[in-house]
Figure 1: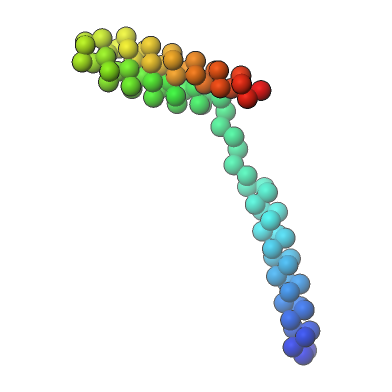
Figure 2: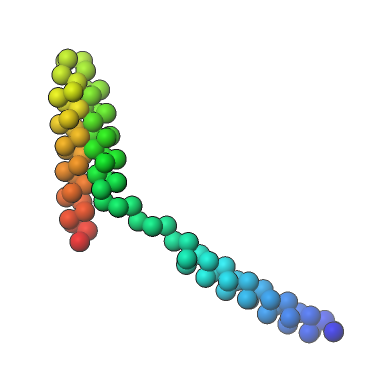
Length: 83
């Protein structure tokens, strides 16, 4: 096998490898996060913020549950806007 044949064979092997990598990337696309996970996450973040804000006034749990509700409502509005 001379240099030209070796070069062509190498290019063929490399192009097959590149195509296979592209196929694997297509299969491994990340799955989108489900809306209820987003609602839970943002609700818990709101819970924490409300707890921190309300603890100085002695109304930590009240503010925390209000923050949770606001966080869940925000996700509901965002998910409806995407549809």
